[in-house]
Length: 247
Image (cartoon, rainbow, N blue to C red; front, side, top):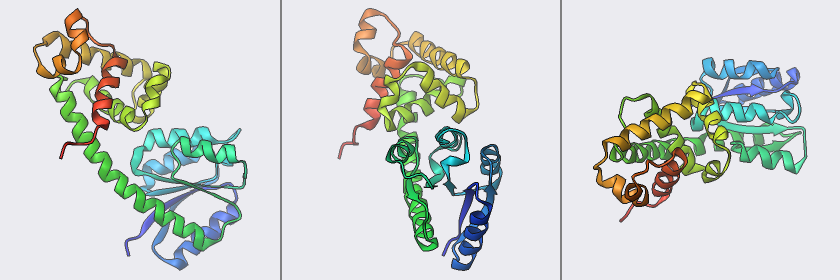
């Protein structure tokens, strides 16, 4: 059985030690790091190669869910996140799922249930990673059809933005700063640069013109001689990306 690497983000040292020893005895799960404070989590994720994060949101100030949002933005879809919390508030657990948690458990939880949920999260994420690879391939093709330069600074950002908008259409209804903030965390660039680079990549592709895909997807803008805004560009292409492939 393939071993699953786990990072514990749990303020209770005794619980961290008990879970670490218990996973070792059960087999198939290996704790690669343990964080007792919020600021320790991201550095451990970047160096430890964990496949699943067990997160107590109460590790941080407030409801602690800002950390969950940071982790999902920085680590992307390949990391499984299982919330295991002493809080029984339904609103917190529901918000955790909206921010990217793959599941939630309320303490106290027995070791066998916790281990089973970790395995389920890891298996689901592996299937999700295959879908993400396929999604990126389709998004890359759409950008190429639109004439986006393959090595330009804005291309990688547009690719991430397009896949994000396909997964979460509601992000395009938020202020532009929300999308750019997510891209900033994911790609490691300032939000202002992300907005500027995406806009420049679209403008350059549009200036070249003459592409059938541009006329097909943006007929009104072509007719008016107007370059689509970044929001228009992402809205149209992400909707296209969400369509099932023809048989």
